[in-house]
Image (cartoon, rainbow, N blue to C red; front, side):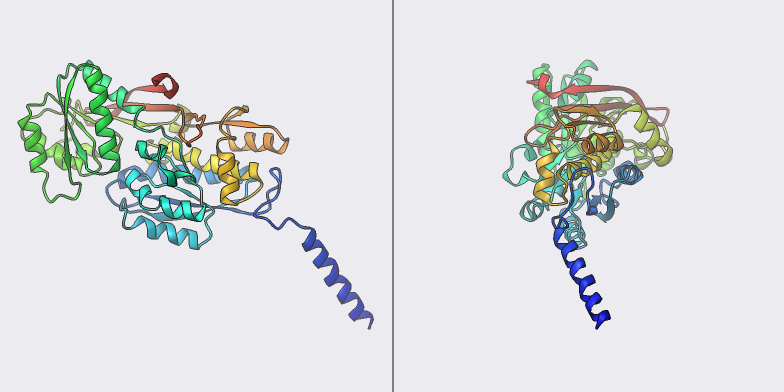
Length: 403
């Protein structure tokens, strides 16, 4: 009888303790009780696979830094294959495994393939490299934000470089997808403002041959070419070189910012692209050095990827929850208007003290606006010199100044 009595006392105490505990998705901001599960969907294969290394490494670095600072996070991964038909399957698998948030995709068109799913499921999504302007206005982007500005930020930079080099008649071969259509249009507008004529040559990225694209470039007598391409751009470049268009008349956007591009175009001639200029979004020097040690030199979108992970973790911490609506409600708050902090550890300590924070990341000050776009951008300018894609400069952009 005594054993039975004490058994039920123990059971009762356990039930009371459970009833008094916090049964939502997390605890308070200082002591979150639940693990935040981060699902990462990156282009491990496909047309943007060459960009995957700095992004994947940066996710790992961010998760490691958060865990080292006492953050309760876990990482799940998936491959989008840079394919809108494959990516939703990877995302659905991660959601089935319990992911509370998604980092990715790299390509705007790929993110469009599952953004509705995440909107319906109320799962926050952060992309480090989607630059299509569409996300700023579409209705199903309520759980979406990004750490790279839309293409309105980069198009004036690239147009200025092309114009300064003396171009007057620019060909813009562009993928016929969401990103390609948007960026090529913005580039055409930016060049027109500088008095430079331009013509968009839209192409099917899955075409069996890009000879018609090269023929159209030749036909317009272009004195400069700006490629709005992914990996297929190497075939267009090869065709242009065969047609006598020199590499110093060619420019690449971020979709073709690949330090191995010359080898892809012509493995027998390491200097085949000397003079080719390309731009991409980048991070600060300290973080870039940290990446270079792990990627062999690739840094594109690394800082933006790292910041996606940290912002999501801080938003969850500030909300005291892993609930999607609670996290997305805090995203702008932790990046705007509070006390500046620069690491997860520093920001988490401030949150624990009840301080409103403003995280400035390794990609620069984010200052996310009310549609989830950063109002600051940092861009790397590089040129192939003696066979190496060499950084020759950088430029910061404050979107508020663009009007």
